[in-house]
Image 1 (cartoon, rainbow, N blue to C red):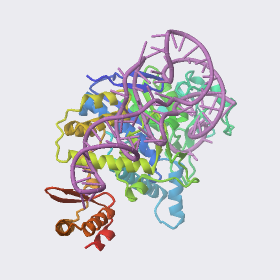
Image 2: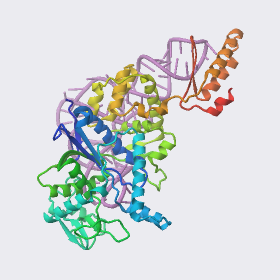
Image 3: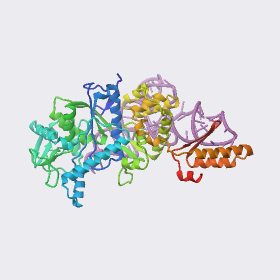
Image 4: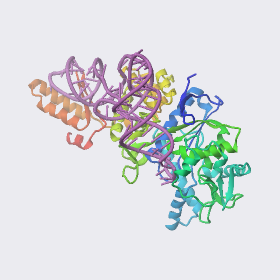
Length: 465
RNA sequence: GGCGGGUUGGCGGAGAGGUUACGCAGCGGAUUGCAAAUCCGUGUAGACCGGUUCGAUUCCGGUACCCGCCUCCA
């Protein structure tokens, strides 16, 4: 069996991964809040953990891996959007409008992530469908003395969990000292966080022992992972920005609710994404969604390749130049592997690269080697483990269905004349015009082969008729 | 202020205490009437200053700069 090593944020070390139960390897990854289209940064954890999912399935068997990724569908931004629609005159109830908004956002999310070649997780629970479990967990935390009710809120008592801050390497006292948050007056301690908060009549809410209200942000992941994966499971993943406070709070909640369990054994965090060297932000004007990129004509497979070329633990810079190079490489590889059937044997060097803390860039380097040496079976099989070169993502690389025969004939005729007259000017200029229109021109002894290149310009081509 | 990540050849980007990463570009060659494409060959770089070592870009300490989190935002 392949030995997988992963950098565990909990210990800050690369450790050998051994599942609790090899017949049910369990991973939980924090999913999106479904209030709008996923931006390009949202795609990074999805791709990173998709590769891990594929690796685990390869090593332990497809049916022995459970991957849960949640949808956060209770959130103030969602409420605000629903309210906006209601204010605009929509006759439906706020609940209906919220449901509509989250449903459509989830559809978008699925479309976009599919376009990037990601497998569907085993389960994708929505927070609103697990409110009962959250209430039960909160009640349990109160009973155990880890939470308290105050002014209609339920708060987690941070001081009751001595390991609080361990994941992110912070001490409660340091954080209070440097805190820039305004402290709600009903908190026992400034770092205490909300498990449950009251809802006014115009906000979605659920009946609870503490009145009508809604859950705080962190409790959903604790409740859903418990419900779907158990009190102890193998891997918990997400972006590094979630390390604090979200994951820290999840740990506090889950460890206090189930003190005899381990909660997540391995914590994996991917670093952030930048755009052309800068943080992506709306104010800098470099903010865009996955859909924006796809609509612009950047294929999902190309996006995926660019993401995989940087190790997940390092900041990744999205640039146009990288996308261009990735497209060129993929086009070449697709041409080479056309019609090749994957026998299923992942080449060892690729597997080893991925097993070594998901070294996707290293795996791509191995693929480059196979391509150079003409080992097309290995190339395709290795790429498959990365979710590349599959039929699902291949449409973009197919040459546009343009019949170039007439151009080839004309060039052939011109060259024939040229050979007789020894005057190549007309033939050469026609050839150069074809190249300028984006056609790849191959003149060999046994004939002329024209093919539509990636940047084919149909207008220019038309002018050559 | 606290915590964390990064700094590698023209560009992108890995691994490894001593031996070629890899890709793109460039350069040289093959091929071609000339090209394009393709193929072959070619790259001693690792922010700075110390330390450990026979030997460090790789380990340790410090400095500088960049980035992120601590606040809704992956």
